[in-house]
Length: 415
Image: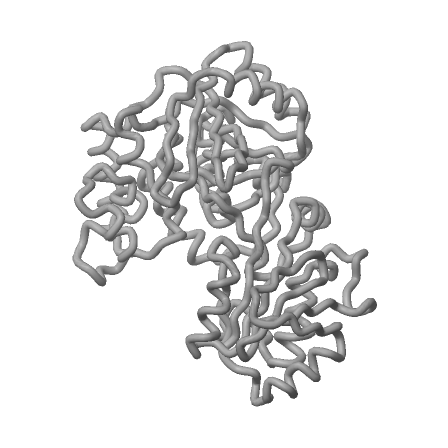
């Protein structure tokens, strides 16, 4: 059963929230963070990407950079740009994109649930990325940024969302990217107890986004438990910062592919090979969007094509075999184009669906890429099925949007 707890959040005063909060550390590079934080000493980038306080090109993994994160975190609290709540409480965080709003609970998630597999993952993590975030959690003794969880729908928790969000929010703003962010504080004791009790009825939580942050946060908590001779199990480090959304609130968007060459084939030869496993229909110059599972959009030589996988080329009974990322990786990228390692092959790149299919067309028309492949998005049911069966999704399968804003609520590990 999922175990969560309320906590004393560290967060910006209402009038400073838009100056403080930022995008997550891993969706932009150091230069982009430097630009976004320009002229704003209150930007959270000074804590989550502290290399921006050094000269351009300074090693972002140098010890001085982690020390700067600690120094800045202390400064933000001293200056009153981040203030700790006096009471342990939960929060509800809403994100609005394209007229759709999803509501999540900001909670302390139990480290043991991660270590024992009740917080389920669907992606592999890289040790170097884990270690970077572990250092960041260790030196700050805090989870500065949350992880993004999903959980099976629960009517009692939906009712709490309805009741709490009927009141005035603590924060309500639209970020520069046009997405709305709203936060409510749950400080009523009975409601706090009810949230804890209802989560205990949920068998598993699922990492939607932030596998490296989840691993780092849980591993540091576990490390602290093992290194504390007086460990009791109720210490704050036994929990880490998460925002948990009902699965039905979330929508995974497409994650598409662009390829630099056709592996020595002419466009006609390439299409002939594609026809062996797909029904191919030319769609012309108008952008074509995949309309169902096992339907793909191909952009090649100024034209769009609909590709529909023929029966027998996929396995709807296999949690991985049913995925369109598997079908396209095996039958097109591997068998025709000779691309076998999606993580490291320089001939392929990936474009999140948030950028639109026009971005695929642009990259091919520019001559940078030779062809583009758009996929029908994975569903939350597929993601949960993969996690439940202990499988791992192929690389670059899911794209969640909007991303959680960092700095709305921070969790300290010692209080």
